[in-house]
Length: 334
Ligand SMILES: NC(=O)C1=CN([C@@H]2O[C@H](COP(=O)(O)OP(=O)(O)OC[C@H]3O[C@@H](n4cnc5c(N)ncnc54)[C@H](O)[C@@H]3O)[C@@H](O)[C@H]2O)C=CC1
Ligand SMILES: O=C(CO)COP(=O)(O)O
Image (cartoon, rainbow, N blue to C red; front, side):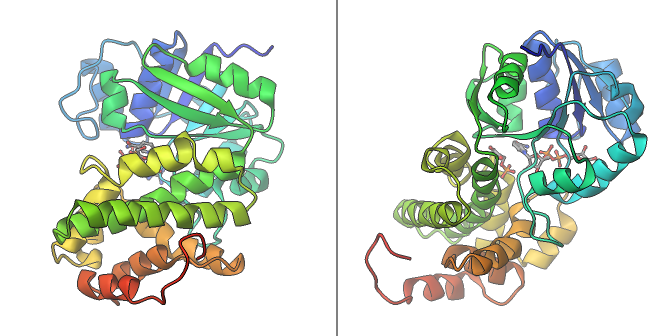
């Protein structure tokens, strides 16, 4: 079986840093690439990434670099930049030529311009590269602090999936292998949109019952889209589906939930997107999810409502009225 001894992480934000720490804790040599020279010097000199993981100092040795080619000899690469930067990053790796090692996509989202899954972009930009997905309920801050969680690593090859799980398994980080690359991505992308809706309910102080009802109806949407795109049912009810949905829809630690909470408090999406440096991937995925749903003839009323709130078409009260006044129907239907 292939042994993965060294892991390169592309992306010096919260999640990239937490995953580089995880690889180090799993006994791997970890090299983190960040485009921001300050991030690299903070990691090298202070064992900190204060911009993205404020107040956390780590003991683990991770190398940090601004030079992508420093990663060419690693055994596996984790791509951990925002979803919309996936194609340009892969184009850069392709231009450099030497990146043929297994790649795990760790961003959660769809490509906005094309509506494609991130794994489809790898097939286009780095054909032949064995690519999978790492996703699940995992706040970067929790993982960086060494708090326990479990995630899914999905890749076509069972053998490679096992090797990647072994490479990243640490005492507080438990990866489960899967071959459902599509299903694992749908959960991660959609839960961000649904978390914005739950945050809006919290921000408008509509109560815990409303938040739970919305999470459950959100899961129905995630399941409908997943089934239409041939996801496995156990993926949708697993860590990257229900697991991550429950986490993100219930905590202000989530940037998507917090973004929605601000919408619920009356802030405008356009202002929030301009002012905040907190990445809320769901704001980019909402419209795309809707388009993908239409292509698959799947009704996604919560995603539609979030998309309209982001476009400034609906405020939170109008959004609630739109959802509550839909025709009554059996729970199992759309
Ligand atoms: N933070 C978290 O708890 C988790 C995040 N994720 C996902 O990981 C992805 C990254 O999230 P975070 O690390 O949290 O974001 P972040 O906002 O903390 O960091 C983003 C990083 O990407 C870099 N970046 C931005 N644009 C870039 C570009 N064009 N080229 C190269 N680098 C660029 C930034 O400089 C920064 O280092 C997102 O898709 C997110 O949904 C997944 C699981 C957990
Ligand atoms: O994906 C995450 C946890 O699993 C992080 O969620 P946010 O991007 O909403 O902070």
